[in-house]
Image (cartoon, one colour):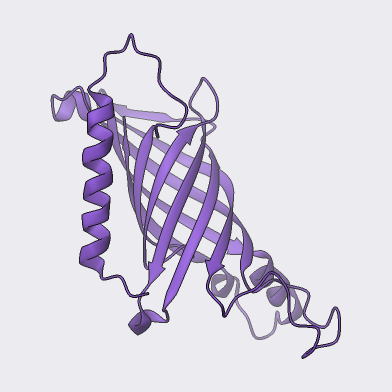
Amino acid sequence: MKISATRIYLIALCLFISKLSFAQETDSVKHKWYIPSSITIQHAGSIGFFSLGAGYYLNKSHSSTLDISYGYVPAKFGGDLNIIAAKFCWRPFAVKLSDWALILPVNPGAFLSYHAGGDYDSSWDDDDYPKGYYWWSTAFRPHITVSTEIKLDAQKILKTSRIKSISLYSEFNTNELYFVSYFQNMRRLDVNDIFKLGFGTRIYF
């Protein structure tokens, strides 16, 4: 399955337009649980060369969120890979920069990624390898993350009621395989070798 970057952006645009139609509802209408509170577009960060996600608030203070995303890595960048991820993020505090901007400096989180396709499985084939020889899954990968986010008040900047805010963020992550490999090969690996960096933008509704 090959998906061009242009097609990814078109899919993102369709999701964005669809979400705007929901946002036109009045505040008196109860927000349905299945309607996302945000849409995310991310580059890199272990979930695809490009990825698209839908975000949901998990608490009333909006400090905890869950993002469900689909990412793709083209063949020329190491693919052909299709990755589905469920990401949790906690934003414990924010620092106000101005009337229309704030920064959320340290946001810990975790996510589970799934590599789809016949080349990946939840376990190694016992016919080829002794049981327990490889302990990790080729399809599932648990990660821990820390991110920094700058959030802009779109209603004050863009004078629109449909988009509440727009944010830009960077995110470092590592997984259990990188972590174990580092401690087993500390002479050969540097800490920088086990962390991956991603950049993204999030639109809140």
